Length: 401
Ligand SMILES: *Cc1c(COP(=O)(O)O)cnc(C)c1O
Image (tube, rainbow, N blue to C red):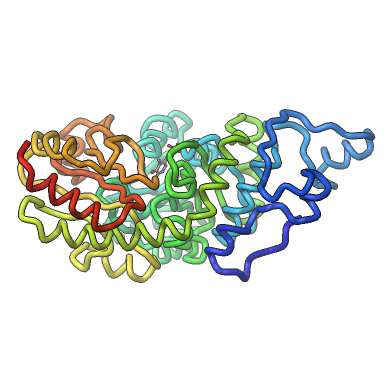
């Protein structure tokens, strides 16, 4: 097994956690310093006795790729140490992590409390799929902590939070709501995709499980889908068991790409935090911008909570242009340094309107009800030079082509 890096800083963990020990390299991989991509589906043994020991979990090893894989295990170990969790298990995508977690922990008759602003796919699970299994879901106004506590007090099995949210970057108080949920013996799950373990530590704030779309900031290069859940061994073990049976496993090549991407997580997040704050300040001062949504601005409605529970405010912001959707249509193609695409958390800046990204399935009325202006742009800051991004935005805002 690997040495524990629990005492090391997060940057050191991002680089070293999950990597092969020199003993493992020597025995299995001819000294390779990088985790190899194990594409083998099955793992062979010299004796039936040894095979049985591995199958029964008495000895570490792998049997079949739907259950475990060495490259995937290295990825899980890196995220586990970054989240300071007892255990971690991975999935084919962020949505697989979310749906496997919910379907493992919930049964007919249970009740879930969550917020209206969860990721679009998560919201679909809440409103379309869980009710089919007689699971009741209460979705509260995201920033109304009193209303969320009141719903929790009615009794629930699980509190599901996401913070910061998509696309208006709202903030919920994890510690406060986790206390309320634990008073009712409910489990607390936090989607930590936007913040990453560098900026926010849900387990230390009282959550039972922290999960991610690794597709976004963890991988950071928009070239691999993946998901991961971190928390105590018993809970993660139950979710792993459901996943190994339903088959939503992370594949080795994706695990390798995510693992490689994560080695620079701390550097990317540091740069994105810094750029996003400066860009938010620039946009807030621009006459063509009606409103900027970024938790690092003191004008943000939950700035105080964000300051308390985050060590950086993250790389995603959104802003509303003056005028309507036609302004967005004219503005976006003028950006030189941004992919106009439905993604975030990459090394390249990514920009798009909620109408084509997070809330593509909603009607304009539904978006208005969710407090999402039609002229909103979500801007996920990459690792480009901050000055270049600001002048790109200035040019696109001032331009008239
Ligand atoms: C993208 C995203 C997801 C879903 O992840 P996939 O990897 O696309 O399945 C879940 N939560 C948040 C906050 C996301 O941004």
